[in-house]
Amino acid sequence: MKNKKKYPEIKVDSVQDYINKVDEIAKKWDLKGVFSPWFRGQSDYNQKLTPSIFRSYTNRGRKKYYSHADEFWMATMFRNRASGLENSPEYGRIDKWLFLMQHHGLPTRLLDWTESSFCALFFTIRNYYKKKKKKKKKKKKKKNKIKDIGIWMMNPSTLLELHYYEVDGKKVMLEKGFHSTFGNDVGLANFRYTFNQNGALTYIGKSGSFYVLADPPTPIGTPYLTEYPLPIQPVYIHKRISTQKSVFTIHGNLKDDFEKIFWDLGKQNSFIKFIFSKDKIPEIINFLNIAGISDFTVFPDYNGLAEELKKRFQK
Image (cartoon, rainbow, N blue to C red; front, side, top):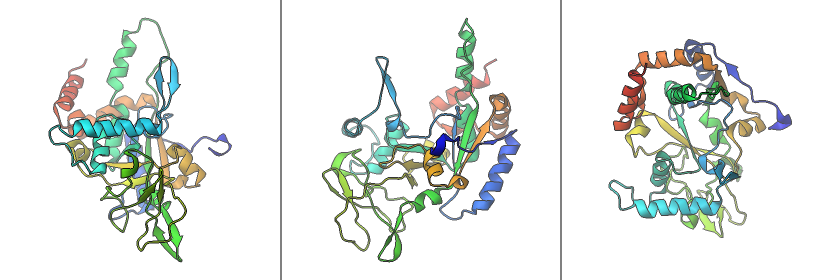
Protein backbone atom coordinates (compact mmCIF):
# COMPACT_ATOMS: atom_id res chain seq x y z
CA MET A 1 0.00 0.00 0.00
CA LYS A 2 1.39 3.42 -0.91
CA ASN A 3 3.45 5.02 1.86
CA LYS A 4 2.35 2.18 4.10
CA LYS A 5 -0.71 4.19 5.10
CA LYS A 6 -3.64 2.46 6.72
CA TYR A 7 -6.74 1.90 4.60
CA PRO A 8 -9.57 4.32 5.53
CA GLU A 9 -11.90 2.85 8.13
CA ILE A 10 -15.40 3.79 9.22
CA LYS A 11 -16.18 2.88 12.82
CA VAL A 12 -19.83 2.15 13.50
CA ASP A 13 -21.43 2.61 16.90
CA SER A 14 -24.40 0.27 16.52
CA VAL A 15 -26.27 -1.94 14.08
CA GLN A 16 -28.59 0.96 13.30
CA ASP A 17 -25.57 3.16 12.58
CA TYR A 18 -24.28 0.47 10.20
CA ILE A 19 -27.65 0.29 8.41
CA ASN A 20 -27.76 4.08 8.04
CA LYS A 21 -24.22 4.31 6.65
CA VAL A 22 -24.78 1.45 4.18
CA ASP A 23 -27.97 3.11 2.98
CA GLU A 24 -26.23 6.46 2.57
CA ILE A 25 -23.38 4.97 0.52
CA ALA A 26 -25.71 2.81 -1.58
CA LYS A 27 -27.72 5.90 -2.54
CA LYS A 28 -24.55 7.67 -3.70
CA TRP A 29 -23.54 4.69 -5.85
CA ASP A 30 -27.07 4.46 -7.31
CA LEU A 31 -26.56 0.92 -8.62
CA LYS A 32 -29.40 -0.60 -10.64
CA GLY A 33 -30.28 -3.72 -12.56
CA VAL A 34 -27.56 -6.37 -12.45
CA PHE A 35 -25.45 -4.29 -10.09
CA SER A 36 -25.92 -3.95 -6.34
CA PRO A 37 -23.47 -3.37 -3.47
CA TRP A 38 -21.43 -6.41 -2.45
CA PHE A 39 -20.46 -7.18 1.14
CA ARG A 40 -17.98 -9.40 2.96
CA GLY A 41 -17.86 -9.82 6.73
CA GLN A 42 -14.96 -11.22 8.75
CA SER A 43 -14.39 -11.79 12.47
CA ASP A 44 -11.02 -10.01 12.28
CA TYR A 45 -10.95 -6.60 10.61
CA ASN A 46 -7.19 -6.90 10.03
CA GLN A 47 -7.42 -10.09 7.98
CA LYS A 48 -6.54 -9.49 4.32
CA LEU A 49 -9.13 -10.08 1.63
CA THR A 50 -7.38 -12.60 -0.58
CA PRO A 51 -8.55 -15.94 -2.02
CA SER A 52 -7.60 -19.07 -0.10
CA ILE A 53 -5.22 -20.25 -2.86
CA PHE A 54 -3.02 -17.20 -2.16
CA ARG A 55 -3.01 -17.55 1.62
CA SER A 56 -0.18 -19.12 3.55
CA TYR A 57 -0.42 -22.37 5.46
CA THR A 58 1.87 -23.94 8.04
CA ASN A 59 3.68 -27.22 7.45
CA ARG A 60 6.07 -28.48 10.14
CA GLY A 61 6.34 -25.03 11.62
CA ARG A 62 7.17 -23.36 8.31
CA LYS A 63 5.02 -20.90 6.41
CA LYS A 64 4.33 -22.03 2.85
CA TYR A 65 2.23 -21.02 -0.14
CA TYR A 66 0.42 -22.98 -2.83
CA SER A 67 2.07 -23.03 -6.25
CA HIS A 68 0.30 -22.97 -9.63
CA ALA A 69 1.06 -26.69 -9.85
CA ASP A 70 -0.63 -27.25 -6.47
CA GLU A 71 -3.67 -25.33 -7.67
CA PHE A 72 -3.84 -27.33 -10.88
CA TRP A 73 -3.52 -30.75 -9.24
CA MET A 74 -5.91 -30.07 -6.37
CA ALA A 75 -8.57 -28.88 -8.80
CA THR A 76 -7.92 -31.67 -11.31
CA MET A 77 -7.97 -34.44 -8.71
CA PHE A 78 -11.11 -33.01 -7.13
CA ARG A 79 -12.91 -32.92 -10.48
CA ASN A 80 -11.69 -36.38 -11.50
CA ARG A 81 -12.56 -38.09 -8.23
CA ALA A 82 -15.81 -36.27 -7.51
CA SER A 83 -17.27 -36.79 -10.99
CA GLY A 84 -18.76 -40.11 -9.93
CA LEU A 85 -20.51 -38.69 -6.90
CA GLU A 86 -24.21 -37.96 -6.89
CA ASN A 87 -25.31 -34.62 -8.41
CA SER A 88 -21.80 -33.68 -9.56
CA PRO A 89 -21.61 -30.99 -12.30
CA GLU A 90 -20.99 -31.76 -15.94
CA TYR A 91 -17.27 -32.42 -16.37
CA GLY A 92 -16.76 -29.46 -18.68
CA ARG A 93 -18.55 -26.85 -16.55
CA ILE A 94 -15.49 -25.27 -14.95
CA ASP A 95 -17.54 -22.53 -13.29
CA LYS A 96 -19.69 -25.05 -11.40
CA TRP A 97 -16.66 -27.05 -10.32
CA LEU A 98 -14.95 -23.95 -8.95
CA PHE A 99 -18.07 -22.92 -7.02
CA LEU A 100 -18.35 -26.49 -5.69
CA MET A 101 -14.70 -26.61 -4.63
CA GLN A 102 -15.03 -23.24 -2.91
CA HIS A 103 -18.19 -24.39 -1.15
CA HIS A 104 -16.48 -27.47 0.26
CA GLY A 105 -13.32 -25.70 1.41
CA LEU A 106 -10.78 -26.55 -1.29
CA PRO A 107 -8.41 -23.59 -1.90
CA THR A 108 -9.42 -21.66 -5.03
CA ARG A 109 -8.89 -18.20 -6.50
CA LEU A 110 -12.51 -17.32 -5.72
CA LEU A 111 -13.47 -15.01 -2.86
CA ASP A 112 -16.97 -15.12 -1.37
CA TRP A 113 -19.16 -12.02 -1.22
CA THR A 114 -22.86 -11.48 -0.61
CA GLU A 115 -25.46 -9.01 -1.82
CA SER A 116 -26.95 -8.99 1.69
CA SER A 117 -25.54 -6.54 4.25
CA PHE A 118 -27.15 -8.58 7.05
CA CYS A 119 -25.68 -11.84 5.80
CA ALA A 120 -22.23 -10.21 5.91
CA LEU A 121 -23.01 -9.12 9.46
CA PHE A 122 -23.83 -12.73 10.37
CA PHE A 123 -20.47 -14.00 9.12
CA THR A 124 -18.63 -11.59 11.42
CA ILE A 125 -20.03 -13.31 14.53
CA ARG A 126 -20.57 -16.85 13.25
CA ASN A 127 -17.68 -18.33 15.25
CA TYR A 128 -18.07 -16.07 18.29
CA TYR A 129 -19.45 -18.85 20.51
CA LYS A 130 -16.60 -21.22 19.66
CA LYS A 131 -13.96 -18.60 20.46
CA LYS A 132 -15.71 -17.65 23.69
CA LYS A 133 -15.88 -21.29 24.79
CA LYS A 134 -12.17 -21.88 24.12
CA LYS A 135 -11.29 -18.76 26.07
CA LYS A 136 -13.14 -19.98 29.19
CA LYS A 137 -11.39 -23.36 29.08
CA LYS A 138 -7.90 -21.85 29.30
CA LYS A 139 -6.55 -21.68 32.83
CA LYS A 140 -3.85 -19.12 32.13
CA LYS A 141 -4.80 -15.67 30.92
CA LYS A 142 -3.75 -15.09 27.35
CA LYS A 143 -4.45 -12.47 24.76
CA ASN A 144 -8.14 -12.32 23.90
CA LYS A 145 -8.70 -13.97 20.52
CA ILE A 146 -12.02 -12.18 20.03
CA LYS A 147 -11.15 -9.15 17.89
CA ASP A 148 -12.88 -6.15 16.38
CA ILE A 149 -14.85 -7.25 13.35
CA GLY A 150 -14.88 -5.87 9.81
CA ILE A 151 -17.35 -5.57 6.95
CA TRP A 152 -16.33 -4.45 3.47
CA MET A 153 -18.77 -2.88 1.02
CA MET A 154 -17.76 -2.93 -2.64
CA ASN A 155 -19.08 -1.37 -5.82
CA PRO A 156 -18.63 -4.27 -8.31
CA SER A 157 -19.08 -2.01 -11.33
CA THR A 158 -15.84 -0.22 -10.41
CA LEU A 159 -14.02 -3.55 -10.40
CA LEU A 160 -15.52 -4.48 -13.74
CA GLU A 161 -14.31 -1.25 -15.35
CA LEU A 162 -10.72 -2.41 -14.84
CA HIS A 163 -11.30 -5.03 -17.55
CA TYR A 164 -12.27 -2.56 -20.26
CA TYR A 165 -9.72 -1.24 -22.76
CA GLU A 166 -9.59 0.89 -25.87
CA VAL A 167 -9.74 -1.22 -29.05
CA ASP A 168 -10.02 0.63 -32.35
CA GLY A 169 -11.27 3.71 -30.53
CA LYS A 170 -13.99 1.79 -28.70
CA LYS A 171 -14.17 0.80 -25.05
CA VAL A 172 -14.57 -2.98 -24.96
CA MET A 173 -13.97 -5.77 -22.53
CA LEU A 174 -10.98 -7.80 -23.61
CA GLU A 175 -11.62 -11.44 -22.97
CA LYS A 176 -8.83 -12.97 -21.01
CA GLY A 177 -7.88 -16.15 -19.24
CA PHE A 178 -6.64 -17.06 -15.81
CA HIS A 179 -3.71 -19.06 -14.54
CA SER A 180 -3.78 -22.82 -14.58
CA THR A 181 -6.54 -23.89 -12.23
CA PHE A 182 -7.25 -26.71 -14.68
CA GLY A 183 -4.33 -26.17 -17.04
CA ASN A 184 -4.76 -25.29 -20.70
CA ASP A 185 -8.42 -26.29 -20.83
CA VAL A 186 -9.70 -23.39 -18.76
CA GLY A 187 -10.21 -19.73 -19.38
CA LEU A 188 -13.41 -17.85 -18.69
CA ALA A 189 -15.27 -19.69 -21.44
CA ASN A 190 -17.28 -21.60 -18.85
CA PHE A 191 -18.29 -18.56 -16.83
CA ARG A 192 -21.54 -18.06 -18.67
CA TYR A 193 -23.02 -15.66 -16.15
CA THR A 194 -20.41 -12.94 -15.74
CA PHE A 195 -21.08 -9.26 -16.19
CA ASN A 196 -19.57 -9.36 -19.68
CA GLN A 197 -21.95 -7.78 -22.17
CA ASN A 198 -20.86 -10.21 -24.87
CA GLY A 199 -21.90 -13.26 -22.87
CA ALA A 200 -19.44 -16.08 -22.37
CA LEU A 201 -15.81 -15.12 -22.09
CA THR A 202 -13.37 -17.04 -24.27
CA TYR A 203 -9.65 -17.34 -24.71
CA ILE A 204 -6.85 -18.86 -26.73
CA GLY A 205 -4.23 -20.59 -24.61
CA LYS A 206 -0.61 -21.22 -25.48
CA SER A 207 2.29 -22.23 -23.26
CA GLY A 208 0.55 -21.12 -20.10
CA SER A 209 -0.26 -17.65 -21.45
CA PHE A 210 -3.66 -16.45 -22.55
CA TYR A 211 -4.31 -14.25 -25.55
CA VAL A 212 -7.01 -11.76 -26.35
CA LEU A 213 -9.96 -13.08 -28.31
CA ALA A 214 -12.24 -10.10 -28.73
CA ASP A 215 -15.56 -9.84 -30.50
CA PRO A 216 -14.93 -8.99 -33.26
CA PRO A 217 -11.49 -10.66 -33.18
CA THR A 218 -8.48 -8.38 -32.81
CA PRO A 219 -4.92 -9.13 -33.92
CA ILE A 220 -3.26 -11.64 -31.62
CA GLY A 221 0.37 -11.25 -30.71
CA THR A 222 0.77 -10.03 -27.17
CA PRO A 223 -0.17 -12.19 -24.19
CA TYR A 224 -2.71 -10.59 -21.87
CA LEU A 225 -2.83 -12.22 -18.48
CA THR A 226 -5.78 -11.03 -16.46
CA GLU A 227 -4.41 -8.85 -13.67
CA TYR A 228 -7.35 -7.66 -11.59
CA PRO A 229 -10.15 -9.66 -9.96
CA LEU A 230 -13.35 -10.01 -11.94
CA PRO A 231 -16.87 -9.96 -10.38
CA ILE A 232 -18.79 -13.17 -11.05
CA GLN A 233 -22.50 -13.94 -10.81
CA PRO A 234 -22.58 -17.64 -9.83
CA VAL A 235 -24.72 -20.49 -11.00
CA TYR A 236 -26.73 -21.58 -7.97
CA ILE A 237 -25.40 -25.13 -7.72
CA HIS A 238 -26.22 -25.37 -4.00
CA LYS A 239 -29.03 -24.04 -1.83
CA ARG A 240 -26.53 -22.23 0.40
CA ILE A 241 -25.39 -20.06 -2.50
CA SER A 242 -29.00 -18.99 -3.05
CA THR A 243 -29.92 -18.30 0.58
CA GLN A 244 -26.69 -16.40 1.22
CA LYS A 245 -27.20 -14.31 -1.95
CA SER A 246 -23.66 -15.31 -2.84
CA VAL A 247 -21.54 -13.65 -5.49
CA PHE A 248 -17.84 -14.12 -6.14
CA THR A 249 -14.71 -12.45 -7.37
CA ILE A 250 -12.13 -14.50 -9.21
CA HIS A 251 -8.53 -13.32 -8.94
CA GLY A 252 -6.24 -13.06 -11.92
CA ASN A 253 -2.48 -12.73 -11.95
CA LEU A 254 -2.37 -10.02 -9.27
CA LYS A 255 -2.19 -11.49 -5.76
CA ASP A 256 -2.74 -8.23 -3.86
CA ASP A 257 -5.57 -8.03 -1.35
CA PHE A 258 -8.57 -5.85 -2.14
CA GLU A 259 -7.61 -2.98 0.12
CA LYS A 260 -4.28 -2.57 -1.67
CA ILE A 261 -5.91 -2.87 -5.09
CA PHE A 262 -8.47 -0.14 -4.45
CA TRP A 263 -5.91 2.02 -2.63
CA ASP A 264 -3.39 1.89 -5.46
CA LEU A 265 -6.13 2.71 -7.96
CA GLY A 266 -7.34 5.65 -5.86
CA LYS A 267 -10.82 4.11 -5.74
CA GLN A 268 -11.38 4.13 -1.97
CA ASN A 269 -14.86 5.58 -2.47
CA SER A 270 -15.87 2.33 -4.20
CA PHE A 271 -14.55 0.07 -1.45
CA ILE A 272 -15.68 0.90 2.08
CA LYS A 273 -14.40 -0.68 5.29
CA PHE A 274 -16.63 -0.73 8.38
CA ILE A 275 -15.37 -1.70 11.83
CA PHE A 276 -17.41 -2.86 14.81
CA SER A 277 -15.78 -2.97 18.24
CA LYS A 278 -15.85 -6.47 19.73
CA ASP A 279 -17.94 -4.96 22.53
CA LYS A 280 -20.77 -4.61 20.01
CA ILE A 281 -20.92 -8.34 19.23
CA PRO A 282 -23.71 -9.14 21.76
CA GLU A 283 -25.82 -6.35 20.21
CA ILE A 284 -25.21 -7.77 16.73
CA ILE A 285 -26.17 -11.28 17.85
CA ASN A 286 -29.35 -9.99 19.48
CA PHE A 287 -30.30 -8.05 16.35
CA LEU A 288 -29.72 -11.02 14.05
CA ASN A 289 -31.79 -13.28 16.31
CA ILE A 290 -34.69 -10.83 16.24
CA ALA A 291 -34.32 -10.43 12.47
CA GLY A 292 -34.45 -14.22 12.03
CA ILE A 293 -30.97 -14.47 10.55
CA SER A 294 -29.37 -17.60 12.00
CA ASP A 295 -27.21 -20.60 11.11
CA PHE A 296 -30.23 -22.45 9.73
CA THR A 297 -31.36 -19.58 7.49
CA VAL A 298 -27.84 -19.02 6.14
CA PHE A 299 -26.96 -22.75 6.03
CA PRO A 300 -30.30 -24.51 5.31
CA ASP A 301 -29.18 -28.06 6.04
CA TYR A 302 -28.76 -30.46 8.99
CA ASN A 303 -25.50 -28.86 10.11
CA GLY A 304 -27.00 -25.39 10.06
CA LEU A 305 -30.01 -26.52 12.07
CA ALA A 306 -27.80 -28.27 14.64
CA GLU A 307 -25.62 -25.17 15.05
CA GLU A 308 -28.64 -22.93 15.50
CA LEU A 309 -30.11 -25.15 18.20
CA LYS A 310 -26.78 -25.49 20.04
CA LYS A 311 -26.41 -21.72 20.20
CA ARG A 312 -30.01 -21.23 21.28
CA PHE A 313 -29.61 -23.50 24.28
CA GLN A 314 -26.13 -22.38 25.34
CA LYS A 315 -26.13 -20.69 28.73
